Image (spheres, rainbow, N blue to C red):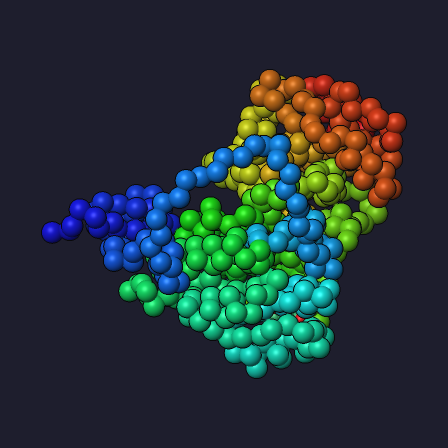
Length: 452
Ligand code: TYD
Ligand code: MG
């Protein structure tokens, strides 16, 4: 019989149950639910905290003055931007990514940058021996940086060291390798990862040390084990790459100290990750000959405008239910767009296979991409190339109306900067930067695509 206090936790997603089950209702995984030992004691006991009596809280006001510690710059502009303009002392950041994407490489470069700026940085690896890290440092050309390097997995040892050394920043590579001897669970389990992350975050908050945690990502894109760690930290970033490509995108999905969806773009080279200062150049395919089915979308990633080519291919299908495939965009959004084009503009895609691709491997989440995707689809359907010197953006409503989107000015400015001479945009987007053709409804878009 299970005791009342026992809880069962899914080791894959962290869902909590009162009794054991073979399959987790929350994430659908089999055999992942395990008994979580209740003898761990209250939080704080893992690092030897003592029982303390309750203290009365001192309430304060919103208007009180707080002296704001300056952000620490790593000297890597793409990384600093993705963090919201440098690292905030006392903050905790989780960086997730698939094995081999370059997390350790990036963080070693960041550690080197911080230490060169005069900060004391500890790099603690639970996965590699110092010799291996030294080899990588040599390859990156950062072996002279005064980074404090250690290889360890015991939370107790790590915390004791950090409390004694008091570094300005600590990098833990990775959180899944840490374990606390106060818990019976194996390293890498939800229980261990959650407890270790909690203790480290507590240390960061109380000491003002910047904490950067590396987390592995499972095949379905979640940070392995505990989603709970995402709630504990101040910022969650994903380091992503497209199969077979050299560039990497660091994307902030949560940031208490900056804009979410901010991106930093890097290129993996023989000597480490290089910053890509102008990502639009990466996502525009160039090529002088105009082909049908390509439209340039003027997008915003975080606070930064990024131009990217959207490609569509519409071709007669031999299948009873034609194929729909999307790379870099939302499949449901494509279905919706096709339905609206059918219902409001009378375009029939029903007997065609439809493929949509965002060039360069970028993933777009903005509704503002609707109009550009629709333009690419129309262009392919009519087999009529769109002018290569125009950008397109706007949100498409179910009614077929084209809605205005945010940051119009920034989108147009970026287009002008990159040599575009015109735009198709929602009504009211006139700004004087470049020539704007206005689209109020999908009918305007169809007319433009037929006769641009
Ligand atoms: P790594 O940082 O070890 O990845 P992670 O920590 O996310 O698992 O990077 C591993 C890959 O990066 C590896 O396939 C080799 C490649 N790489 C380069 O192309 N250039 C370099 O300078 C370095 C250090 C790695
Ligand atoms: Mg690594």
